[in-house]
Length: 219
Image (cartoon, rainbow, N blue to C red; front, side, top):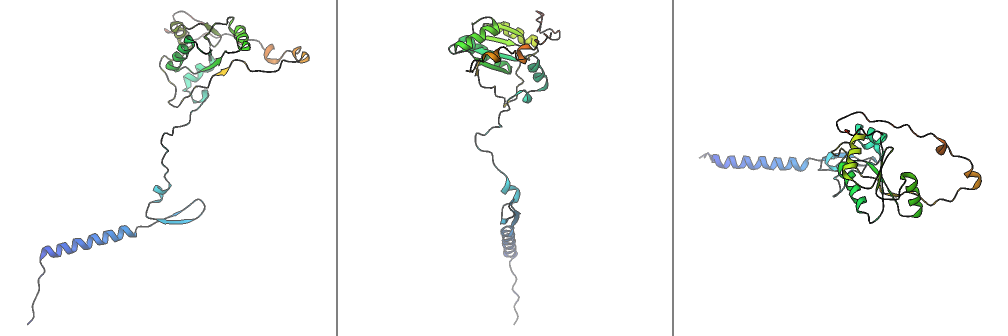
């Protein structure tokens, strides 16, 4: 006598689900990616080639600083070219520290020259007419001693912005000595004026009239 066996619907559904999961697992295991390296070597991996070639940045890494005016915004770069700023400092000088902090906080690109030797002092006297520090030059202007109000007034007149516009990765150049030890020129070479010494000074330039320059400072 023939007997018909009828499977329970829930049991059939469970078997179908198990078979589907098994097929998905087999498909996932069979997913293999082929990639060709720069040396032409072929490799196979279960990781997509894009993920293989992606390089994670090292912890603490930063975009390298870009020294020089080329990294500055256009208007700030133009101002720095017309009226370059140089700070003259020495060690153990509170005014020098205050002046440096003012320029840094305001975002003024500047060059710092240190005065520590007799040769430096002589060069400073020749440049500014005094041996007091700090000293600041903005274009042809010479400011002696630190005064935040005066320095800000002259920086305003030159066109430097009040708020920093420096790129986030900007780094100021390291301070350098005002003079370097060089051999004294010989008598023959000293009698011949150099091209730099004979060149006429650059004409002074007046910044455009603006409300930020009520004192009428001229450069």
